[in-house]
Length: 250
Image 1 (cartoon, rainbow, N blue to C red):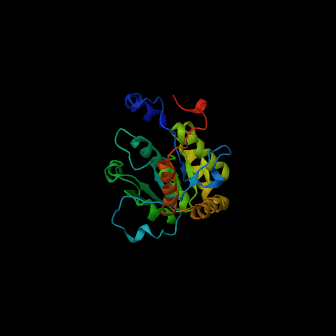
Image 2: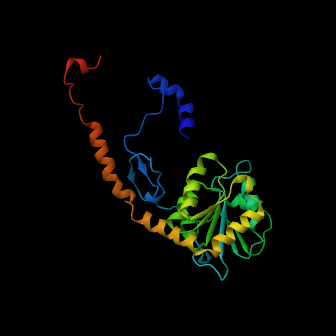
Image 3: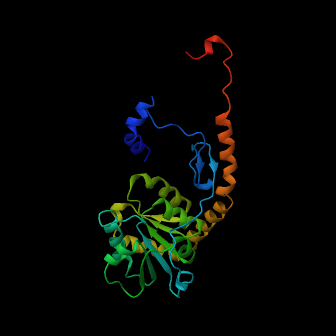
């Protein structure tokens, strides 16, 4: 994403005498400490707060039935030309499971899925409301879906279709809070087996719960405002005068 931004803004950067994206003065990171890589840059931690586009809520969103509740999603931005095929394939691969299946997608894309079994609900779902009732979330490893599930302690089955999401999908899997399937191995048999493994193995939910608790201890966005204010004050401070002529600019 940074490379794409640099390419898009290249002309403007050159006009300003810059040849790269400006470096950050303060790195605000929502990654919980247990999942940060050993050489990660110093950062101001901040709690990820799940949110979603408002929708009329219904009682079933808050309470699951007698069967496990599994959610499948390929993100909120799918269109007929972007990720719809991924969503349709995922639904087809898991809809035979003996579970209550929720399919999270824009309503118009959910309608394109056609008739679905009685155990399936499809449409725009408020993840921040529905996630706490789910036993597993099967998804494309998109950032908001992954973090939203983590914040509610829900284990996941991840299929990282984009290269840049493989890294954190691997870390989450190594931590024991998810099961990862490589895109080339995303057969119905493998996804079904992964869902069943996560449902039948308590350690996945335990580790997901540990991450939820860790995230809950991170500073809230409101608390981080103080760090932003401090950084802004430092940026407005007058630079110190050079100590010698040799060090003076120009």
